Length: 471
Picture (cartoon, rainbow, N blue to C red):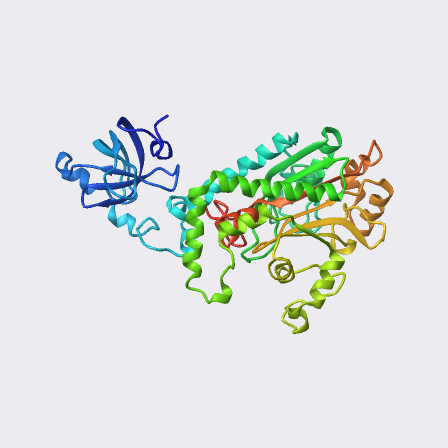
């Protein structure tokens, strides 16, 4: 393999080498800033223009890809420690000025909306290069964390006949003609109604009840017609399941897991995070003071890893909100009363105003949570938990699962979940059942927190949202 710029910048000089990349800028017919995506920094290429043809120099435009052979030397200029004196330049792919002007590769500021429109090119920008390098490191950290903790990685199905959440907002999978009004689903490809999965949890539970500790990490799909900055139709979920565990152990795992991932990002992506941190400060300087973050991006990450998460019950959260100034002054958009699901404005108040730390809420009303969550002794709540982060709201949702057959069978009836569709799930409660728990982490929500990006569409390479499935 050829040298990458991230490695070249660490090398001793002098050294003969070859490097390939894309031109970020070409100044004075002498200095090329070359980037290959391996890091934020570019390598300065120095050439003596009289040694190269005018035809080649004319084609050294921003965006063009080249291969350079030369001598790596200590740089005499500011801004870089080393530079490459070019002896040979080969153009691999031209980028004409005419074509360049139509794209986001031209050296000027573009809106995030414009960058999304050219999703095939936005990887080449400094901003999205940083975001997606961080995404790689976080994905790797997820596997490393669970592997080091003795969890087994389980591949759960993407096509399923079960809606774990019971929301009904699923994408149907079929080979039957769309124009048919009445069809016999026995003639469909799988012989039954199927859809894209909303969660790998139920299947992960089966594995945990044999292997002890497992996790899934893959794409999930929800046909929710929402165009907010926090929703995608296709997104990635991390879902660990642990046998012989209760809700407290579930919360402990969630807190430890999140702190590990954020700490890993701080150590593995220093240059990219500093770039995003500085970008946020610069952009917020143009906002009114009351709309700026009190802490910078890196400070928010350090705040999470350096503080124990606050733990309160849903009932305690409701009491805090009812006593709050926004509630008394009727500044909350949504009413607060026991039994309703908390809205993002309520979560934001608890995390950012009241506690100013990450918050874990447990013991939610059973009527607003899924059928598989374990009933508490009070008969009104379930052993559910949500972890709330500043700027994000809910980042993790989990529960202790209902392991008692009779109770789970009754809850299926209450939530209109057909027993025949999850007979295998129920059967595990009759064959050596044990207490067990788990949670789901929305990977893109975590990415938003770690990168400071305000729109979830900007932390996944190719966002899938209502009326949008480009690239």
